[in-house]
Image: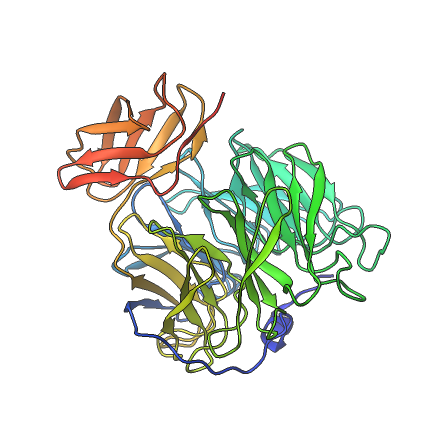
Length: 466
């Protein structure tokens, strides 16, 4: 039986309070799409940019078969429903989709499959879905978290339920569907094993090759159920708890962590902190922890989508509640903790954003709201904050000779691709995609593409592996 359900989510599983806030000057905000039941309801996952330049996501419910959808949306707002889930092939996808290096998208569903415990699936940009694995409880159940593709080509993820102790697992899965359970979290309330339980957020692979994630509860930094943890886990399943939240430093961490340019992992907690409205924190791979910001209801509340680092070096995220209308915000926070509210939702433009943001290679931020919009079933939006175009690579690491996809905008006519200054041969496949191979002699650093419109740099350093 799930420890989370749709009713609890609306009633307060994440410790929600009524809020008010004052917004700072608005940026250029555009509501791109309002979901209207048949094309999906309640988009909860972070959007992903694919090699064709479009954005992809999921809705938790709705669609023609009522169990959620996978969709494509252009940056201009034209939405296409790619797939309607229906039980046996999975149902109710909470997390977003993840682009694989093969050009296909990968995701999870919280229910459905052969045992109704959720699935891992693959879907093409044209909408052909292939179920890869049905969880059966022993190997995990109800994966609310999304996936991450590691440098070894496998995908890694977590389930919030199931496993040997019933309270969540970490797993890896190949592109062909072979799943390996790597770790079983402890039983809820087991004070002899304070490594946490209910991992709701996805994992991130850091530059050291290890994965980092959070658990919603446990760790015993707080009485009874615990306030949650941050953990490190190796690709082989060796887990180390790095931090146990205690309340003043935050409670119930949510959202996938992100590795900053400084090597720290950044994330948010859904509640706790100095004012009880959640925090933004950073933590080193060895566990050195610092709270960067305490939300105080006036400037937002419950940043459960985590943060991303923009090309300007600042971090961007959403709060599910707070803002002028108590319907959530979009914010910017500097690496030293100075926060600016960029947008406060009012319901008509969306409400209660529970997912994180993605920065498209056009420089703009894109996201979803869980509620609101013209039909009150959620929205897709864009926000321009004055950041210019760039390129991103998939994967972000590899050995010499590895195939690298370079995503961007207006790449037609590009004349040069370099990896930290080392030139590479390449093929321009479309205006949004270049395919290249990591050249001999390349070192870790920025990828640059010279286009007719100027030189574009990658948003993160490409890491050259041995």
